[in-house]
Length: 194
Image (cartoon, rainbow, N blue to C red; front, top):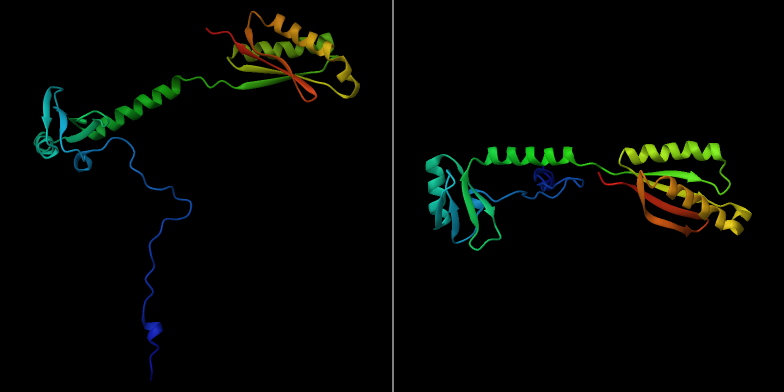
């Protein structure tokens, strides 16, 4: 009985990353063996300046202290490294970043649409929305759309937008003055700085 040699051989597959996996990249500072400089400026575990030493000497000092050697300023000449607990350092950095994200205010652009012949009651309702958006710290994009023969009376639309700017001068300031974009006139009002 002849054996097929092709079936006996196992095809070795090459381990590849899935198509949607991001490329693996080290983020953050280099630590311990990854520090490649010939000389480094070392800061001890207590914050004292040890001076310029070789990375091997710094690693032995870090091992004696039971801590990691972390490259703090890689662009300095020579690079500055510190003996510290890397896990604690990463935790504190993440905490600072989360705190900074929590404090930042994302400004959105809200849009209020007008027509050149907007009636006074409709105008009041739309202006209440404009004031509400400005109080919340958002920018307001005022859009005035022309249809058909209204294009012949662009001055009516401009007067309406000037009236909006005049009415909102206590709550916000005009960032982009009225300008035509095709068949519509656009103006941007931002909140007053606090």
